[in-house]
Amino acid sequence: MSGHSHWATIKHKKAAIDAKRGKLWSKLSRAILIAARNGGADLDTNLKLRYAIDKAREVSMPKDNIDRAIKRGTGEAQGEIIEELQYEGFGSGGTAILVDVMTDNRNRTAGEIRKIFERNGGKMGSAGNVSFLFERKGIFNVPVAAIDEDSLMAMVIDAGAEDLKRTGDQYEVSCDPAAFRAVQLALEEKKLPVSSAELMQIPKVPMDVDTETGKKVLRLMEALDDHDDVQHVYSNVNVTDEMMAEA
Image 1 (cartoon, rainbow, N blue to C red):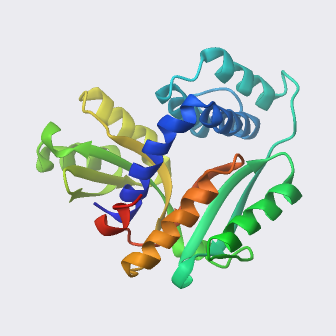
Image 2: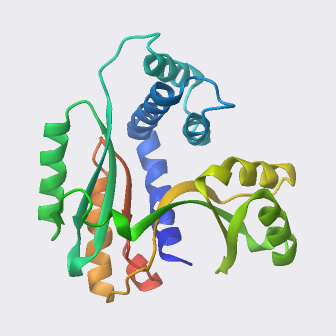
């Protein structure tokens, strides 16, 4: 399994816990609000909003919560002013870390994120320090048992996907973000099970580190991800099964 898929596995485990205590719904509400504010409420033209709503529905977020977040984003309802920001930094061994946040107080959030880096052996950097090491991609994981590789390859390439590879018991399909919805629809039309569907920052060249360093980076990523304002955390570490053993 590829490194970012390993991290996605950890995220999915955390999502179940976060959903129970309402934290995940709060994060998703902010994502919906920002998407609606930037692109309007029309799901046919605002693919970022469609994606955010799909993620909310996956964790059974109530329709009223979704509608309320959309209305706040479009200005139909009042609420705090939310900003979308990205922080960059370094983990153990000089590894690269990207942190997407949505906050109503950038000074508070910046200070808290900086402390999390420092407490976990990392250091927050400046804009542009590590972002050039990543590229944004749509990533879908489909169980190998669901379809043969050639059939899946033909289907997703026709829909606009860029690549397909097998990682363990999953096929990993990657695409440009602009093709995300088309690939998603192609999979839905064939009623194929999808283990995960994410828009992610993928490292251009994954970095190999020793197991202990990798575990330290994962602990830093989990600590960052646990912050209320953090939406996504990415690293360029090539995560291995050994690093996952204690995750």
